[in-house]
Amino acid sequence: MSGAGRTESRSGRIRTEPPIRTRALTKQYGDLNAVDGLDLEVRPGEIFGLLGANGAGKTTTILMLLGLTERTSGAVRVVGFDPARNPLEVKRRVGYLPDAVGFYDDMTGRENLRYTARLNGLKGQAAEEKIETVLDQVRLSDRADDRAGTYSRGMLQRLGIADALVKDPTVLILDEPTTAIDPIGVVEILEMLRGLVRDRGVTILLSSHLLTQVQSVCDRVGIFAAGKLVGIGTVPELATRFGEGDAHVEVAFEGVSDPATSDRVAGFLAAIPDVAEVRRATSLLAPWTLVVRPPDSAIRVREAVLAVSAREGLHLTSIRSVVASLDEIYTKAVRAAGLASGSHRPSGDRPAAGGRAVA
Ligand SMILES: Nc1ncnc2c1ncn2[C@@H]1O[C@H](COP(=O)(O)OP(=O)(O)O)[C@@H](O)[C@H]1O
Ligand SMILES: [Mg+2]
Image (cartoon, rainbow, N blue to C red; front, side, top):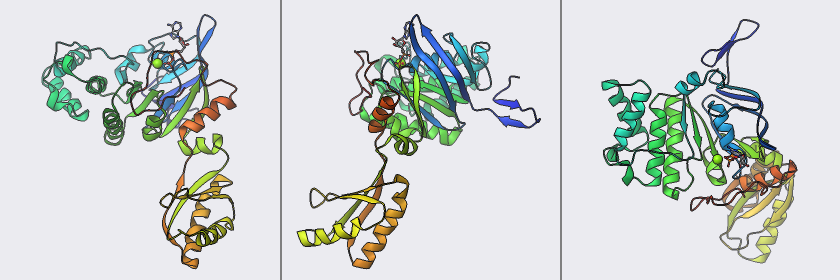
């Protein structure tokens, strides 16, 4: 049966269907498997990041989720519907920010949104109120009556998100929402997306080839390479799976300036169980790094550092666990899947300043 995200199981109990689910989803262009047997599940109220180099198949996946391109094989359910069979039902509930947003330059931001509202059957006072709300949500109210042609890329992107919000979607799909935007604009957009999840409970799927941005905003990440999902989970989960097989704990001390004290501290730290290696600070102010193996001993190691510092009178000034960066995880996941990370990299698409690209 179809319904808005709910299905009745055989036992008669209603269970909530994930807002987005694909099974063995495949898209071929001639000989090329642009998307290759994709199993994806996005949970309600999360920000899910589809991370992959240019040409990995992100846009093709998104177009299939929206019913904008036909799949070759496999199954898709979005908000309880098959987008190939019920594209209008999906379109009504899912807001979409394409990778290249287009607006009428000589119309104001507000007029552009009015146009979209009308296409979605919203008119008059209801439309005006909705437009005011979404402009506020994307923090564009003060520029709403300027022509869209005068907007920066970041503002156009925010107008694009406002545009996707006009129909009150339960799911937002954003294709590379932060590409080619300056770093401040990126932070604004990512904070805004967090706010939308918090205040309106929307579910967000975004695609990106920029590691740091995905790492900072997404609850879960799917690592996508050559049409295949090669890893899925939270960044810490992926780190455990694809990291070096160990965790890092950083510790800093005051008054460890002479070699004798340094040796003494190193001795205490090396004696802690599951500390595989002690890397001393390279400068007076830098932290020391404890390599912890297995990685899930990191909490116990932190507690042991606190205990030993108290017992031995060491002046511990900071302590924290460091998760492997997504950068490192991405490279390992792609390599583990037997795919070359650069194999599908077309040219001509530069990352925004301040962002690191998957390459
Ligand atoms: N309409 C199309 N016809 C033929 N090949 C295509 C078409 N669209 C995309 N592709 C190819 O499919 C692969 C995946 O592209 P795409 O989904 O755009 O990747 P991404 O969005 O991750 O950069 C690429 O190799 C691309 O060249
Ligand atoms: Mg794309």
